[in-house]
Every structure is written in C-alpha cells, then in structure tokens.
Length: 352
Ligand SMILES: [Zn+2]
Image (cartoon, rainbow, N blue to C red; front, side, top):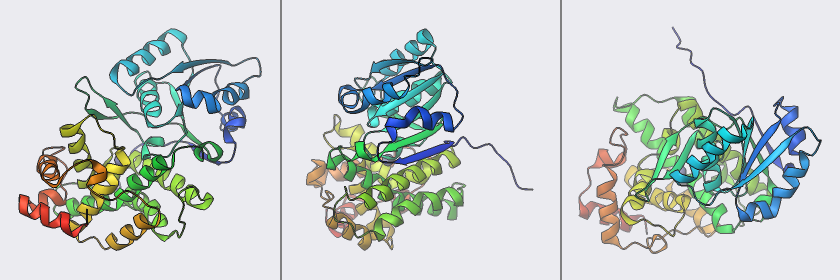
C-alpha cells in the first residue's frame, strides 16, 4: 500500500519585473484574505521597496505595520513573536535578504500565521524552504524546521540591485545540491537513510539548469530566472522531504563546521557551501565536478581556501569536526573516514 502524507508546500510563486508594485493584487488572486499585514524588512530593503509594497495595500481596508529586523538571532525572533501577539496580523511578509526572511519565517511559523517571502537577494535557498537559520546565544547559526511560506514573490527588478556577491552565493548554495543529492543516494544505498526520489530530482534539477547555462554574468536576465526557479525548487524539495536533506550533505556539514569553529564569519553561507562542494565532489568522484568548475570560472565564483579565510591546517580541522555535525546524516565523509593526509590530498585535487 502506498503511504499517503500531507506536504506543507508554498501554494504559489511569482517571478518577474516589478512584482512588488502589484503585491496586493497577487495575494488576492491567490485567495489570501487578510486585514492586518506585518511587513518585516531592514533599513536597506524598506528604502528600495517598502513604500511601494505598503502603497499596493492602500485600499483603505488593510492595515500595514512595518518593523525593522536588525539581525537573525533569537532576540529578534522573540521580539517579532511578541509583536504578532500584540498587533494580531493575519499575514506576515518578510521582505529582505536571508536574515530578514529567516526571522520572519520562524516567528510566523511559531505563531501559526500565514507568511509570504519576498527576497531582495538570492543568496541561498531559504526563500521557499521550511528551514530557518537563527544565530544562538553562542553566536552559532542553528537550523530550525518550521512552516514553509505560503507564497514566494520574486521581483527581478529588485534582485538586480543586490550585490553580485550575494547572487553568486545563491549559485554556490544551489550547486551544492549536486553534492548533497549524491550523499543522500549514497546513504540510501547503504540502508542508512530513506530518501524521496521526487525531492532529490527536484533539488538537482535547478543545479543542472545552471550548469547548462552559458551566461557569463550572474545578472543576465535568463541566468537570474534559472537561479530563482532553481532555488525555489530546492526549497520545495526540502518541503517534500520535511528536512534540509536534499540540499544539505557533506558540503553543508563542512560549511556548518566552519561556522562552528571560526565564527563570526565574513563569508556567506552559499560561498562556503559552494566552495566545500568542490572538495566533496572530489571525494565522491562526482561526474559533474568539471562542469561545476567550468561554471565557477565562467561567472568568477570564489573557489579557493583563501576566499574562506582558512589555511589548509584549519580546513583539515574543519573536515575532521564536520563528521560530528548531524551524525545521523550519512555522507561521503563518513564513508571515507579521512585522515589528515587524505584531506590534504583531496584539497590538492580540488585545486582549492
Ligand atoms: Zn544551504
């Protein structure tokens, strides 16, 4: 008998130029009824789009409260939860980069309020996923599984204003799915974990599209569309699986290990995961390694240890520590049981 289960997926996603100008119409078209909207952003995002979003709700019957998010930490989540209890909104909108979206998503999920994600950059796959990364009191980023957004609106005219570095980080996070999916299939073959083929195929589909693209600029219209759709699919894959597994394998263990050992970081999550992917793909003898390297060179994605501000001994320590992170998740790191010399050899082969 086929087991049936309920999947918490975003009901819609809209991608295109100036989408935020007609946000109210978009939400109504998707039968989202609301009277009080809590709009969360930061100084920069409110400057570039807070006014137009608020004005799109100006039909007299809808109240919009704005609130600034200063950081993606536990006090900010708690503060927004208290605001939700006080103002009683029926819709929360996160309008910003990863930090704003992570706080908005977790606070709305904890209070069981509908949440819409409007990213202003594409630096990671959190735009449509049920995962929220919040810094704990020890300044370590911790992943929480919560409710997925009920909708995602990507205004490409706003995304184009984002720093190129942030968009490249999104490329790294999406490409890292190729390493994560390899690990998930490895775990399944060893009977260590059960996976979902639909979720894994969805997670790697967006990464394959990036590899096929010939664009040399990450701000090329077609490339941005491929990246947006890929990151959204990646989030959907996590919703189907109910965990970050389709987009998080050995390369994410290494990225989390870097955060754990060397925080605070100057590098972005997607940069760390994208660079670590070159290393894990060498261990996996992953068939897509050369294509990933060619893509990174074409778009000038940072791909060296120097860009991670780590030397080779620090990287060895990072990889050794990485197997202690999510030990329930079997990856190529657990399979290979690497010595320091093995790690240095793979580093050399990965040309990092
Ligand atoms: Zn990631």
